[in-house]
Image (tube, rainbow, N blue to C red):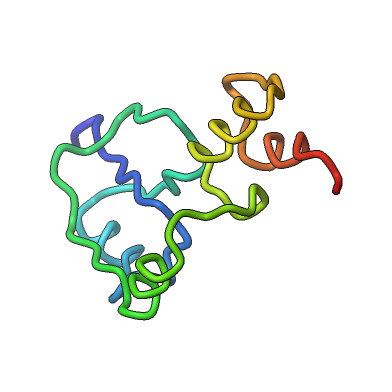
Length: 104
């Protein structure tokens, strides 16, 4: 088996049509939530196709980008923290970054 066997897919996985975990297993891949890590070590070159369920894609089209920092993905949360002048560890995981969000 190739060393590059990781499928980085933004979670949550239940928002995709079909069973993406089963697709990953069938393809011999390990599935990792791309929202919780910046690393792309071992990323597979060829991955199964994952299509969002209509209710999830319609939601993102209607509402636009997430504005609540507690609900943002890691990349957007880091940009938000930077825009607010809040320093963070570049290797911090999502829960650690969320802990830096000031109480309102």
